Length: 440
Image (cartoon, rainbow, N blue to C red; front, side):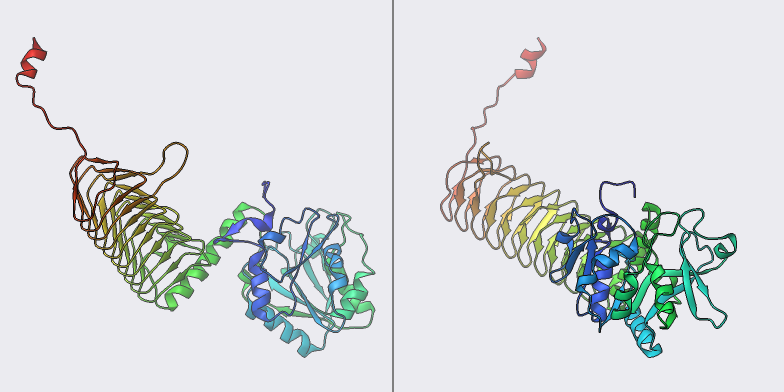
């Protein structure tokens, strides 16, 4: 990956790669999920609760990685082994592998697939009766012969084992290969030598077991994963006008009859209700949006927009911005850590930060809450049904009572009582003949 970040922690549709096969294992009904990490234990904090982590002390290959988990494996259980970089694997595919394994009465079953360009995948060597003899690695020159490299059936890196047979075979693994590593596929000949059956389970959809080894492959897999996310949403009643230009993370929830227009990005833990419109080029990150909302060409981060509210175009809702039902944040409006009451409007060209705006209030154009004094943040409280005029600045902490007004161009530094008009500006003075004097 040419990266300081471990490969399986690179994001894929909003989730680290490693969490995709973990989720598939849980969906398949795995009683325990064990992840093999290196001594730095960088994966642990990214894994769901309940996932167990073991450490492979040195990078000595896939067989050694599974051996690190041996103390946690139950001899009487079916053990499924999955590479951490196969994010498109599904719970259904794992269940199908386990069913085929148990139906065949095999001690080991390997999922295989046929590729036109097998590349560095291990080649599956079969006997004259069609049974699996072994897997020949093809990572380095010398691992496989020219004849073996012509084989198109490859090992997917996904296996089902009888627990006892796997544990016994792991003890017999060696490093007789070009990389001097302990390869997990070498378990298969060991199982056969013990007199037990090794089966293969062909996977017809080659995308399910695609691995990721560089950023080119990551981009390819991301395209497939994104298509899967889009199709699931569309089949559940969401309109995605142009899927090719739209980015939606796997954790995003969207209600029926919502429309997502081109070039929208919906990321993280965002949730969107029913009958909402997410306009073109809008970005929502970890935000909650209700039913019947309209968001046009705007950016939301950790914001909440309740039913029937409108946002944008060109609005910026920052963390803890909360528009209550029917509220509006209009053109070139920025809101941060503020409550905008039901039906209240901030129509255009305003900054509202660390403020509470009551229901039904209307904030005039160019209003600003001056919430920071250079040391601390302070709140502005604007009551219900307040009408503020253009270019009003509120120097926090300050409170404006219900049904109050402010005069245009005012700098409000003191509280305004309910139903009062607050004006704080110098009186206008006209200097007659000024232009003539200046010209002279």
